[in-house]
Image (cartoon, rainbow, N blue to C red; front, side, top):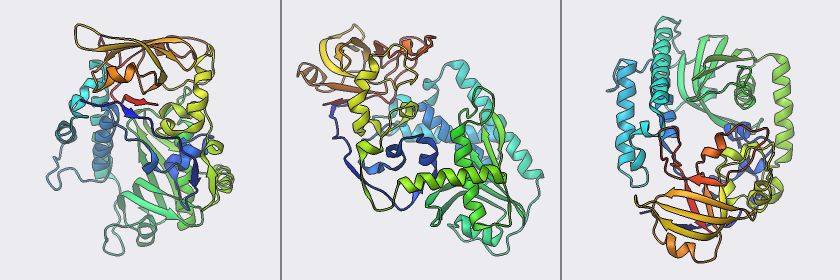
Amino acid sequence: MEQVGHLPPPLKQIEIPQQLNVTRLATSGPCLLRAIAPRSDLPKTLSGPRAEFGNVVHSLTELAATGRLGVNGIPGDPHETFEYLLAEAASRLASRDETRPYANLSVGFTRREWEKRRFLAIAGATELVRRQRTGPRFEPSFPRVEPLSLAGILQRNVPTSAEVPFESTALRIRGRIDLVVLESPDRVIITDFKSGSVVNPGGLPNEQTCLQMRLYGLVVRAMAPKKQVVLRVVSRDGESLIPCDDESNEATSEWLRVRTAQLTAGEQLEAQDLAVVGDQCKHCDVRPVCPLYRSSVGALWKRTDDSIELPLDIAGTVLACETDKEGYLSTKLRDLADRVVKVHRLNPRNDFESVSISGHVIWFFDLASIEAKRPKPGWRHPRNFHEVASMATERTAWTLRLFLD
């Protein structure tokens, strides 16, 4: 049975790394702390069924795109490969107590959503197999050596490579590209696979996705200036091409120049000064140790028409706690905004009852709430949360973490 841990201390000084991760840069918005916070300083998190399903889809897509179905024991049919990867994930998740509840990944979705995502994943992989079989192929100039970096691939004209690492000293960025295809000696296609949707309300790739891809484009251009670069995203929405013209490249270069100028390698900066609370907090794994988020979120919970959609977290002192007939816990809190809120259907945890009467603040990160779905002109933080869903249309908080402050 899971225990209630102690809230880690907030981050203080951060040493700026020499190389910055492209994905974290692109998804951090204005928050520099999210972009550079050391992963080793963050509390342990669970993946959850949606993220694990995304990993399965990513693996299926990559295998199909690189022509590796039917090789090394992997089934040759996309449908069979999907089931094969799903079984592998189930076996791995079932071997750990904390992930066993969602070893069957379908529990993280409604039946309709599961069937739709499953169909789209297999259909997308089938299309990639068709293209991979009918597209042009070019032999490398030299025998391939593993692992091969992006620079080596471009130099040797390797036709197709997956999970390609890169590091640019001049640009100060590093990362890993899902798929690099040299369509011809003068044309390189960079592909990124996304398991979810990446389009904005207008149906175009969102800003974060475009920025990530254009940063990849900058690296390729720096390593192989004479090659034409094509940026391609394959997601639940289908295939999207990201413009990679001179104007967009110049804008991306300027964005990166400003960003790196704010982050001088080796400098020690205060985490409080690097942090920015905003929309990027919603899926940020730094927030449990972010000093600004922890000190300011209580005031934001008071607002009734905030423009920022906050993460489904809550913190406060326990006013009451009870166990229902199914064995779930329900607790009433006075939160940091001085509101009375309730958390329903909590799985039992070791020492929770003794913790709840201690008078200390309890933090809940990544809860679920049906109130979060209600239409409203601005964000209003819920007063009712839950961990375990009570009906098929609700979401279970598979990645919930509890900490005693």
